[in-house]
Length: 421
Ligand SMILES: [Zn+2]
Image (cartoon, rainbow, N blue to C red; front, side, top):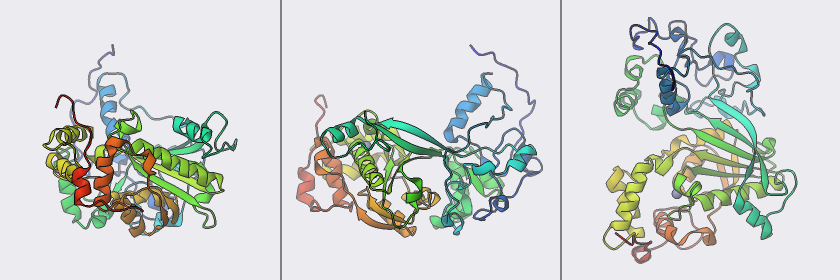
């Protein structure tokens, strides 16, 4: 049991007055090519005068940190010891980092590459990475099966004997440049700030009181990038690149639920990425923490019940309507922000885009990245119960090489019923 310590601060210091918060801060000039000109993101809670952003590091996990401090298991002013935490590979800088408004939802310099801002850190500025890059061996059982069936081969370098896949992976926390976000969604920045303030229950007053602070670290999940093959191939126009952008679906990705195609499609994406890497190119899997179309898992499970219990059963023709009944919208993933990760990687052309989503395709191509070929999920990988989702999505405009299901097909595509419904 942790010992509870008395709070050290006698009074609460509000963040809405420039006199304290950000008094000695370094200005952020978003989009500047030279990182020292651009300035570091400083979200420290130790020295408030140094802060130059709204919010704090670690996304939603900041709440657990608060609990750790409140319960006495973490020092309020703990400073991260970053010895040996530097990236295993260097990513960027790429030309896309400085094209105005190209990257507005993450900090391209967030990996603190090559001793970035070390002078300022030596001066006492608590500058933390928002991106971490490491290496891993991953093991996907389905890939072993693909080896056994002769679809892919062990090369001993990227795919080892025994099914180990060697990857470079990067975890990225979001950092929103509010003027850029407002511009991308064609809304007024003041309206965006006010709505963010209100819809988080007033969590970040500076959104409305401190228009001078333009960067917000939102309490949401970010992205994880898995890179297969040679990193250099990602930006080399003479070498092929395969990309799958996958939105989190814990039920299928981890637990193998058969109501959707998420895990089978993710694994297919990894297989395509591996083949491309083995052919001298690179494969990139981007995993976005946007559970249940960014509606959350509670909403998702409520929708499952609504779908399965409706009159006439779980049908493709009412697939989107049931989500809309519960959530008010079909989807809140806002793919408009997603290409930022690709621009951080310096991607300008994708030879094989492993996704059928028209929203993703439009977002990627409209952001200036060329897509050469779209790869659907092979029919044989679609679980029977997931045909409801697949047919509904194809009818709604998702990419397919086959027929677009008509109204009759949609009403006749019925999923599994609850036995005790
Ligand atoms: Zn799913």
